[in-house]
Length: 456
Figure 1 (spheres, rainbow, N blue to C red):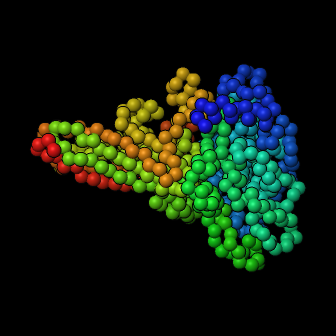
Figure 2 (tube, rainbow, N blue to C red):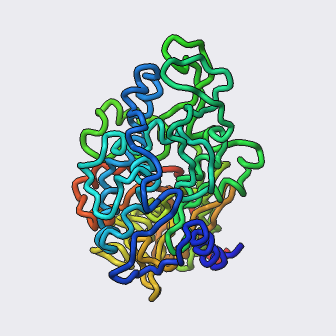
């Protein structure tokens, strides 16, 4: 299905599910809150008080809760970048769309009536502030759709999970759930479609067409790797699944985790992304004074999804490349940062469009006029350059030389990835977080280009 087909079919599907007409990207002043009977109900469909905080789960499942406590799920409601984005959206729509992002970040709070237009972050119940807490997943009885908080929460039901022969518990009932072993379970929140139908995050769609799906591998296989241990204190050894939910994000909120915990998160990320990409450089010799056709190919070795994936409109992945002559002088470069730490594209405050050869692999929005747009709810188009699983992307750079250029040319390049660009954090008033953002080098390559005295 083509990009524009999805762009117009998705709002119709959402409208049928929600029972409302398709909203516009610029609602009038009297536009009502956006209603979805499942994930953004007009009236509460469950009681927040019915859900246990993680501290109660920790009494019997201390290892699970300890691992969860530094995860992005535990971070979902305290992430300062997320909160700032919600505040911008809130200001744009006068609170009318306050529930959209929160439907996944706290399904309990959104369905429990605490997330309403103009809600106060500090007034939320503790279990709501825990974000994607234990029972936000283990009270899921079914999946109504594979996007936008499509889970069905059963507040009075058992704890659902993948154990087929659980130990008896005096604290809660347990029911086996095959759904919790499937990638579709993750899709319920990690596949995101804007209110106007614009696809925002689509890792599940990427997985459906991936070699991993063909081989029967799921999201959980990589992001919840198995280990041995008791499911509950005093229980028998079992095959368990890591509740760190490792991705590429390092928590930026001060005080969320200790230095030791942050170091552990970073170590897990490096382990996850190791071998995810490779880079090849190719160039034929030319005579000094001619143009070198330098070919760079980036391979995505991930089986299950694109590189990058998820919030690709926030992530930055790019190719940094530099060519020096035999005297060490820079002949050509691209992908280098300005003094603010930003790429030299349209978002650079110091050197906009100063890098015409820049190659990026994320995604970006444009507004109805075709101008770059930072925020998805203001956008009309979403264009992606991410690399599909087990595919590659090739770029050719035309490197000029002069008759006086001393060869050989030394080429160095690397594929770089970071979770947040500095310009976004500055736009959100979060300048103090910029030094904490990690930049990962996914692949590095070098080559030498000979310069001949005659045309080869």
